[in-house]
Length: 343
Image 1 (tube, one colour):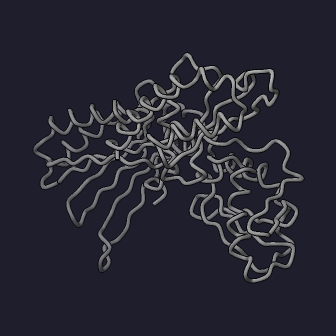
Image 2: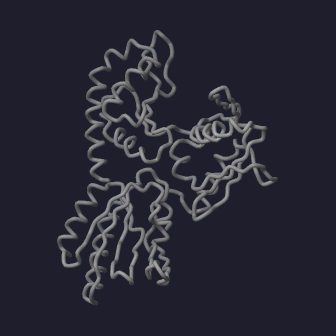
Image 3: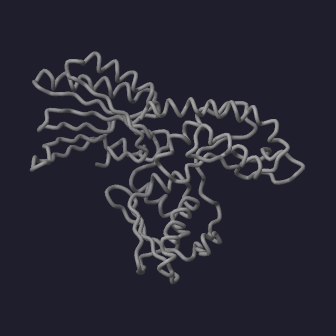
């Protein structure tokens, strides 16, 4: 996965070089023309994402970049978020306007509506119920107007697009877990335009304020008994790390797995973890999140989330060389909503 990030960063650099070369021509074009030509360039390097101009100046006498922001979007597809973040981090300093990753929430959603294939759907046609399931906000959705069976798939697809605009692209994809469409709403359902504030409150109630936790972190231990195909596990989770879940810069998980064959190996694995944890939290660039002892297989895995995966990987490789007798293995994944942490 990290090799993909490195590749995307190189493609992003190539995109920006080509885009800047074309920029003098953009100054004489309208906003739609700039977006069209910019996306033609972007498709050569990062074809899975798109470029948009937010608040573009539509006056023919002014440069369209005067008050605008370049926004890169993955259209809510979380597997493509790496590309958005790569192209933003590689943005040069001499650009004509700010650059941002992901669409932001719309400021006024009361009259928002969409049309697709002859079918229209408005915000007031949708009601929602937000609960918490498996440590994530879970959303139930119902329609307040009668929808013919042939248009139900359209309505559901349009609802996901509307969530992207109403909550913001990152929040919609990362901070919402399960989504279910319900045939009939009950009294617990609320208008869709209440969802942004409801999600904000729910996220904070889950303890996720984005602030790096103070020292003296709290840990929780859970045991899973061996049963059939289920291995016996001991899981130790850094509960304090939960405050960072959902932060866009804390989206990479790096794990080191060790083989444990003796008491000496156990001590060595703990020593490895101590050093790994220390590297992970340097300058608050990451945080240790979880350790899993597989008693059935004689394996121990330690996890950390980081905003600098390339730096932490280099440190992890040094540790694996130092503790090579443990037959260590490294795994690096893009994990923006911390699936490993909530398992």
